[in-house]
Amino acid sequence: MSRELWLNLPVREPERAKAFYTQLGFRLNEQYASQDGSFSLIVGDNQVVLMLFPESAFRGFAGNAVADS
Image (cartoon, rainbow, N blue to C red; front, side, top):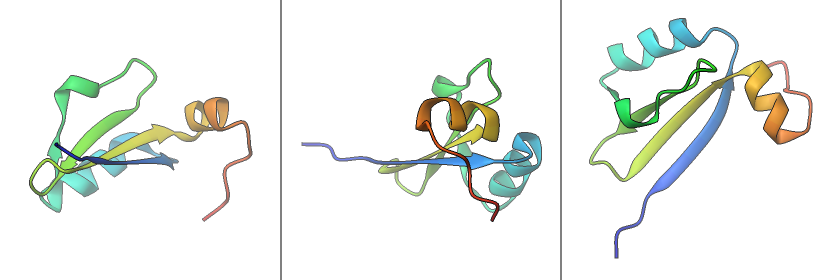
């Protein structure tokens, strides 16, 4: 059985975050790009997926305020 770990995180500047993580070697997962500016990155051997959402989109489905990190 294949197991994957999906991490969903808010970001303030999606394009800047995308540039940062791709420069670290994460691969864009084109299968999960979205119209709201969210995107997906594959970490390592496809077992970990990092999904980054603009803060407004994340706030919408989380139902809570996003912490100021």
